[in-house]
Amino acid sequence: QSALTQPASVSGSPGQSITISCTGTSSDVGSYNLVSWYQQHPGKAPKLMIYEVSKRPSGVSNRFSGSKSGNTASLTISGLQAEDEADYYCCSYAGSSTFGVFGGGTKLTVL
Amino acid sequence: EVQLVESGGGLVQPGRSLRLSCAASGFTFDDYAMHWVRQAPGKGLEWVSGISWNSGSIGYADSVKGRFTISRDNAKNSLYLQMNSLRAEDTALYYCAKDMFPAAGSNFDYWGQGTLVTVSS
Image (cartoon, helix red, strand yellow):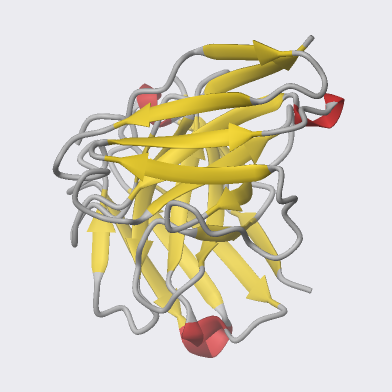
């Protein structure tokens, strides 16, 4: 039950696009189309941005998109805005006794 | 409006017990799985435990298995986490989170504000 691997930090300028990777194993990311992404601003509760790899909850901007290939999932944010600066976490279903395993988190800086 | 309000956190000595509660409102509680997710100070998120809509499916992280017990009371719209044999490494903000589906998965669409548990002598 190891944590998923994310880059510690990424950065981009306003208007640019960035991608955050999330690497797991064949026991979690690779086995299920059940990867979700969360945005967390300092001192706030996490917010669901993407679920089931690429679906957006109601109210989430279409600038956020998700994908998966093999054991690696990705979150892409296009048209970067200042308010996108936050920590981002991926999470994958990992089986019937370990429902969720998170990544270590990625700090996004908007330059 | 969906609301999840955690309570029961506090300062506790190593080896002691604590019971967290989460009061849910604004949705049909017994239609959804529920989870506990924690965040140690300055650290990332860690899934702790989850329970399906009817308590038929329960899961735990390896780090808490055998020490923590999750339960729910659908009549009271409440989720619980009984934490025994607490360790310093259990110190964290504990979030209650709602799943998007009845079966426990990894899609947490609503979160509470958390309750802080500090394990220290």
